Image (cartoon, rainbow, N blue to C red; front, side, top):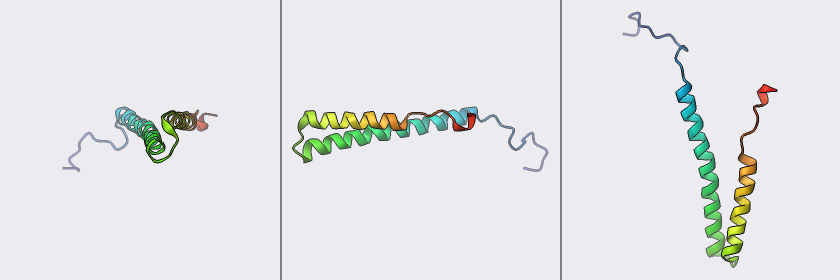
Length: 80
């Protein structure tokens, strides 16, 4: 069947949709991990220390701000 002269040519398929899906999954994983970590951090500080609600919230917000700064998309280094 593979050698029956089909129209398949290796490397000729348009993979734009697969690339877009991969990029979406990677972005959702990255940002979802950040917010999950911030939530775990918030509840750990809230229930396991004497930080209190506002201290825990402030610490989680600092973590989110730092994570957003560090995980943001950077310009493509190959373009320069």
